[in-house]
Length: 70
Image (cartoon, rainbow, N blue to C red; front, side, top):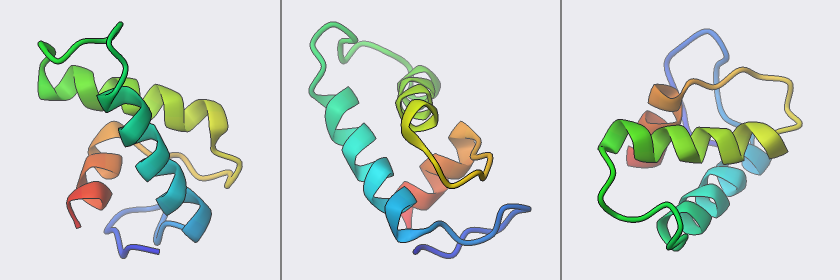
């Protein structure tokens, strides 16, 4: 996984894959649209991620964005 500074530590491989899946799903979802702020965009990704994340780690939208940018 990516190395992420913070309390929860490194992302698992499953979390890495889930971030990619969430990004792809949200970026292609016409109902969400592309005219949203960066914060709103990543909040949608976090909601998708949270619904499917089974790692037991809390990940903030800022943490997800940081992990993605890595």
